[in-house]
Image (cartoon, rainbow, N blue to C red; front, side):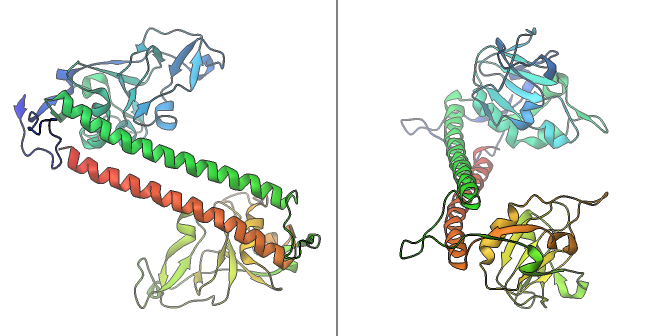
Length: 395
């Protein structure tokens, strides 16, 4: 090992204020033993299985940096048993980035399936710290990946990975504890968001099934709901194309009008234009890709790529009807790319209450959505904070 400088920008110190030992460069082969898991297929899984186990695919879909609980069980015992502190990585994927994913096992005696690299560390390396470091230094993994269509990384390759780590296990543990606390915060916020979303879905079910009704200011029941076809409530048109000279990706003083397309991302925002085609309040509904996503619009904009536009014929709450349309079961009637046309959308039937009750339902659900958005912003800020720390904590 040789001393590597500079050291990270952010360093921990001993409790007496003294500097901790230097960071040093080493190969993984010098501080780990690496082996592969053994054959274990999905067909071997069973809910009442005796042995906890991890399959290769679960490293992508079920686990983050720390594996705190096991999702799968089996009665088929393999010869590879994971221990507390083992770091697991996939051996194959269709992209190199997928292979640069590490999870540390925080449990004893877990069976490990094939296509899993099992990294067992020496006593001088904290496994949680090591896992965070591996997930940060993805370029070190990617440069050793082989294969064309399917990418691979084998134990012999992992041993060649070069990392810079602190000699002091104490500093490793301090870094691991700090990052773990941030991840716990993110997990708590994600759970809060999930519960709010479940609460909202439950309320929507009751509201639109009329199991839960609002009353007017005098405490009286509102009028019964009506059911009509969308063509009786809205004038439905489709967006078109936009000339290149009227479009750019970023907003400025001239190109200030949103351009919306058929997309779930960014509420369909595609870019900006110096002109607009729609200057009145309406609802847009996606007609390509993921069908039937309704969003109320309250500013001038330019619709493109056959984005469907719903202009109200009668006074109504666009927010309420957006929620209602999003609950429709939109069927794809095309044989190729999923699409929804204006004539098709016109035939869908929708139930709705009086205008006053529409507005109350809209305000109620919007307030919940606002809480969900606030929690989501907290998640994004915490994740951004974590990424900034990683750049300062590691070399």
